[in-house]
Image (cartoon, rainbow, N blue to C red; front, side, top):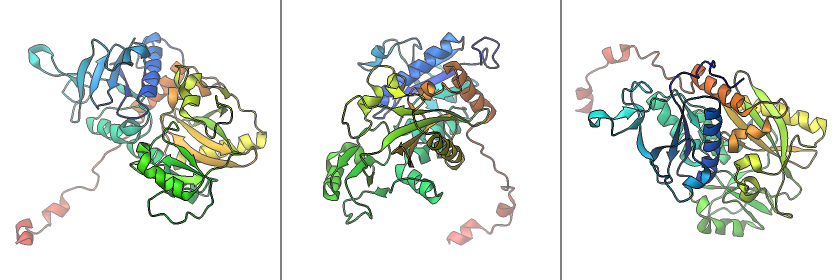
Length: 386
């Protein structure tokens, strides 16, 4: 898609790029959000940058800011917003993102046509923000509320993959009274809810793994444990769902630190460009048969996990066998760097996500069947309570 003013939504209401949030991935989300806002602005779109603070507050900020402006907190000139659920979202009727301080002291709706969700981890990627936007009637890019919740929950996602007969490593909930797991160590311990390798530990035995529950703050909401295999490396692929399901080139991320046990946060994000600046093989140098298997599994996962927008599926492999690891429903940099085969521009990726949000909203609430017949035939509630 070409970035021009003739695009169907180019002259419509504002596109609100939302980023930040109360999440350990707050800083990475800022990078992704600013990348998206700058790209949309360069393409002539009307953009509002909405910053979600670590404390959970909303602010309208200059969409032309650079990352350094957020290093010490709230940038200068920010204007406070509220996210309000109700009717008339995006119409100025007081729902959606609302800015106070208008004429006569009245609130004024920001009125975004679409929210471009660039939040990683936490309530921006676990279904919380999606549910709020559904209630406000504001369409948005990325996963639905249910798809986001599934993707964020490593235990639930792992169980879904295993039940579908897809290849995956054993995965179990890690609790303090665990006696055995059904698989041997060494182990890798992960937050049940989270991403970006934050809070992940490799441990030798179950006793050490359980000790991490008390010392690792990222495990407070729950933890999962899996066998750790030193011979496995990472393979990732992008999936976009509009106008049809399409797969990107396969990526093999590289570790910056020789001998590192896992692909860590520093490997992914140090460099100032989010995931777009991380070292990688792209396309990955793997066998045609392994690549074909990975692509087939990814297409099945797109339906199984109800993927939407531009997601990324992460695999582990020893070069012969594949294991589904996790799905990132809002990947770093929105996975824009993956689209080299077939080639796709960043604005093309964003345009398709926005069109999907407009033409196929994530929420379809309806009250079919609630015709009042049950109420008309009900006995007195008062008599039932007597």
